[in-house]
Length: 215
Ligand code: HEM
Image: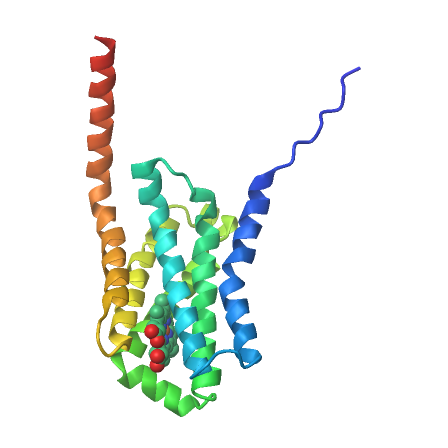
């Protein structure tokens, strides 16, 4: 009689949940520090800053998955959806912090800010563009939308550039940190149109190397 197969433990879904759990640690930790009065100075601004920075980091990490796989053979594709959703939730938390803690839900001030302060207009546009991406990040939407899904998700390039520009414009002087985020966003977006040529060149190089080895 055939022995029942021992079910091997699949660590992959668990590692994705672990990424979600770890990804929310900075928000939870700073929320705790703020709520217990352990953030010196303007706690709301510190919290807002932290959420904005992590939103941008997760956006950059999401866009870094493809070049990392192409150029370094480091395949993190299964984590891309989680990274994108973490970026989305950080932007939502950043927005809620701005609305509730910074502006005390003063809707007329918020609307005025969005309409009149260009860096907030750009941030808001990025959040609006993130919504359809988050809503269609599930497997059902990927199957249903087919090629249209790829086209829609190209919005992520505009979003990361908007996010980095929003950051650079939010500071009075563009120091090293916002500059680096802008450069990274630009490089990750600029990689996309160059990608077919880079891949072709790598393929040709592989073929010529293997031919040389077989000679
Ligand atoms: C993709 C979307 C967004 C990203 C990546 C992002 C990221 C950031 C970052 C990194 C900062 C700099 C924080 C600092 O150094 O103080 C910032 C500042 C700010 N963001 Fe956003 N943000 C986004 C969307 C939004 C939205 C939707 C709003 C509100 C409508 C908003 C409101 C603000 C405000 C008011 C500040 C300035 C905080 C201050 O006065 O220091 N952001 N954001």
